[in-house]
Amino acid sequence: MKNYLGQSLGLVFLVFLLLTGLSLLPDNLALDGIPIRKMDILSDIRASDGKFVPDTVAVEFSLDTAQANNRTDDTLAIRFVDAALWGWVLEDYTPEQQGLRRFFSAIDSIRSHKRTVRVAFFGDSFVEGDILLGDLRDTLQTLWGGSGVGYVPITSEVARFKRTLVHRYEKWNTYSITKNHQSRQPFGINGFVYRPQPHAFVHYEGADYFHHTSRWGRLRLFYRADSSAAFVWQNADMPPRTDTLPATSGLLGTWDWTPTQGAIRAFAFRFDEPDSNLILYGASLESGPGFYLDNFSVRGNTGGRLKLIEPALARQFDAVQRYDLIVVQLGLNAVTDKMDNLRWYESELDQTFAHLRKCFPGKPILIISVADRAGKVDGEIATLPSVPAIADMQRGLALKHGFLFYDLFRGMGGPGAMIIFAEKSHPSLANRDYTHLTHEGGKMLGHKFAKLFLDEKKKADAGN
Image 1 (spheres, rainbow, N blue to C red):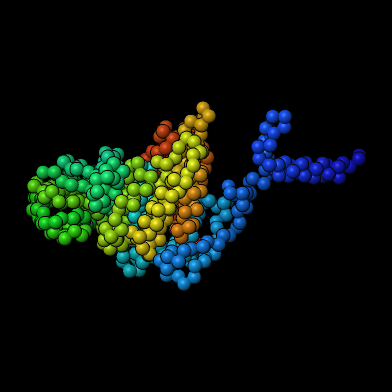
Image 2 (image 1 turned 180 degrees about the vertical axis):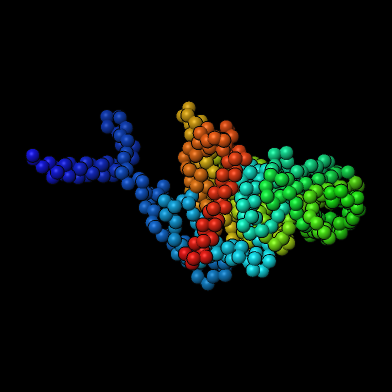
């Protein structure tokens, strides 16, 4: 039989030369008025700006950034994580790439030094009502200790939706960075301000769904008062007691109570005749030492209005809470059904990330990308085109600012993942808005995050 291998290879080579030639044709070329579509056989390895993506990148830091990170040089060589690992690992673009090690060192000190490790989680409606975070917190508290849900708001639009806490309240004026951003309120660390009306009250009660939320051993109330403010409080079946919040001279104040014996199952407080200048920010329900995850979700938050949180006030909160990790998961509210110009959102997040560095100087910051979101695309339900673009843009900003990064979009499965979550999973992991998780979906992703942290800790402990 005649061997045609040589002829076949020659034909392949000629096709390759032809396609390469077509790749070099100028844009908008037409033949007899018919436009010729330009081909680019190298598009899969070319970046969006026409440059090839290297395995490593040299990041030029401004002098201010270098000084903020206590460095004397202004250039850092950072290993850019291989795209095949996106969604599988936490990408560390912190100076010296030590952000994870610092956090895990704090984790180790829970047992060795009996200390509390606390994480601040800034998000939007994707984690509202402790979806995802409830299961993540519960798993990590089982491993590292602690009980109680941590920071809780005074009011909540999803109070009845929560599985981590029974929460009732009445007669409060609530201001948020998304709904009342022009009110000039001194927004707290969670993006809210609460002002009591006469006879305003709040009731917190442990919930039994999770292992570590039914009881806690300490309650702290965060507030600000120009003059002393009387209030009534009650622990479970104890008789009501009257106490006073001292004036704080414009600074953050904390009212702290720990029972002499036993744990707190339910706690309530009431303001019968509050001063008009009294501000409440929230409370913390906890039993240290151990691990705590504070949920600062704000519905409708794209991230830009986090800049309304004053750095000085954020640092006052941090002085009390002592956060070991700051997490930011945003993007859901910037997703559109078209591939619009995202420069406006990149600029907004760029400024927000710089602002968060001022709020939490020296703290490792983890950026979690936008999750998958689906909608009508050319008449079919599909991942909205702006989702992967936003995720990649957020990675670039994490790299620029020297933050940690996790690609949630690809971690949950990439294009079409939210459709599978909503339609092809039993029980359903997402709602039919193809945007928000169900409690079961939150449980699945919460456990995924817990495993991710544990896998990364094992690598850090092994010196990798």
